[in-house]
Length: 359
Image (cartoon, rainbow, N blue to C red):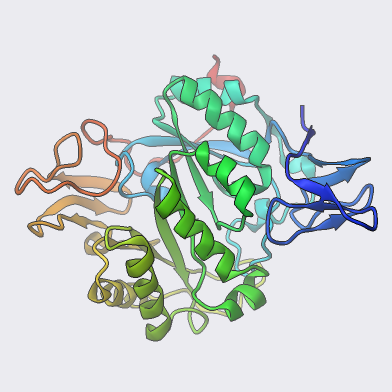
């Protein structure tokens, strides 16, 4: 199966069908596809054309999503499909997210197959990643439900551009998320991403105020685009006010890709500077990513300042928590989701074909 009827659309007065999944609100005539490419009009309905098909599966460390406070050290079965509802000029998964060929989707898998494979591979969770899972909502929700039945948790790696009604259904199925807050100006979102900052901030506030989903935030810093001290400080202040001091933030390094080849890679010093600004604003858990930086990758206790998780890249080293995430030195509960001792998956990346895993 690769085509199923979508759940969020209505008929416009001129006869076109409007997709109501994301704020782009594509209006389609028969045979047309939305900007995301994977949602299309067929007759009198809008359909998802990639249900049950993936661009590939891989077992990753959960820290690669990145999530530092969700089942640390455990493996996660990651997969994506094709297409995206944004047009980021710097996309670093552009071969998947900008694909206009369904032949990209070479690995077919029903939701129950994915859940069973995650269990057989020893994964604690399944991640919807590589391209934004909101565009394949029906498939992601079904995979999440099948996974929960087997005790496997689910993770959404998303830019957060989704409308209110589908947002409720989508995140009700998720246990954790990493939300890509690409910048803190509407100018950047409009000109560089073809999106809306306001829509993403609404998603972040919704997650914080109305769900139990554990989520962390990633901000990719691009030289001379979104890396000024003022913008970093404004973003950190908003997060502190609306999401709390314990909300983890990851500043990660850009490298030239897709249609933004004219910018240099982000210096490690820029990430460290942004981290210091956010900490000075009052955020407790601020990390650097895509660089070797043990200080920027490690977690400290908010009670006593003890380093409770040391990380080098994706490898856990020192561990100062009990099984429920309580500091063994002072008894402070660390924000996040913890279940028993830390995992030991490390930095491995293991591509898999589900047909070879068995059931």
